[in-house]
Image 1: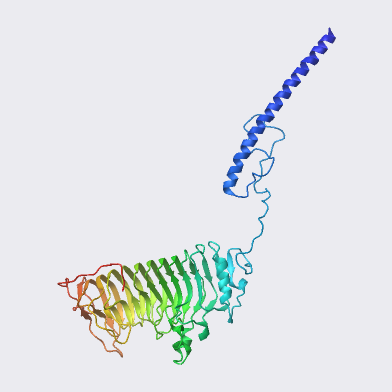
Image 2: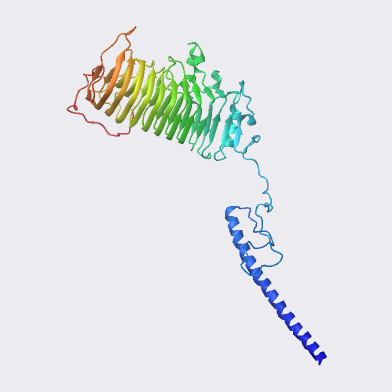
Length: 484
């Protein structure tokens, strides 16, 4: 009886063991399916975030367990940060044959590329190599370090295949060569930035064109070579250009030129050249739009800001101008909060006779002048030569507003010289207060020729020569956004 009971118990124990084993395998099978599903999902996620995902590894554990009870021992979730990287790719030929930069991979210091920075050695090739490296990295920095002087010849920092948002960090000094062999015939630039997107020039450094050295003697090569035709720094065909902090001095011609650019910001920039240096515009604009110039000191031998053909939506404010010829404007321009001292002109609009198109929508506001020869000027007979042929056609001028122009003059307060065929119309004067500097100067009364508009407030001195209303036959030509 007890024996039969023992065998019965053993048989029952065997049946229970077999049932328990089957349940254990089933649990493991389910756990395996769940793990494979989790691993597959995790691999897809990693492949989206990182091409070096861990989906090639074997084994592992799930990130989540929904089944109960949890298996023992408790599995650990895989650590993606600790996963070994994929095998490195086969090395290829470097994209540029220059030494690597010494610091962060996105900073390219010109000294790491062989620049000496002693003011004597030619560092042009080192600058070219550093730019070639920076050009390939988005938001990279080309570094020109402080406390060094770099002699650099004509060089082009060009796209269009450069990455966007490159920073040219200028903390040192860059000087131009003065030997005639360094300047090719007909060369129109020294430092040229072409077809770039998001280029920024910033820092506390100096660009020195050494043009004043060439002006010291009429027998120097400055007068016999094409060096005098070069621009200090030119931006051409570029988008979202920023220039800030730097000093540009002694340019042979334009200190800073923008041509065919869209989205330009210039601020906290200093321009310095002798007042008698020829054709040395501070900032020169043509065929450019959406331009902001502010909080800068511009001292030069020609226009502090010159805005020429094809420009629109230009805003200039908080600029100190002088010495120089003042600010020349054309179309869709706002100039406000500007101080001018000892300049030839204050705010000027000039167009060549024989031109076409129109100038309209120009505002000059809150202009402070001190010992300026001609504070307010419109000249439709501009001639940059000793003699120019008289022509009847002209650029049509309309919608020109002057408000709060105050200070002192040394020759004439207002000079409006407009065309017989296309007189100036809609010229508005408001709060004009100009006083003569009596000592040493011969004064002239306001001058107007074919200028029509109104004075909304009394002016000092009275500008009675401005005719009211409109001329009997004024037919402005087309292209309202054209400059001269």
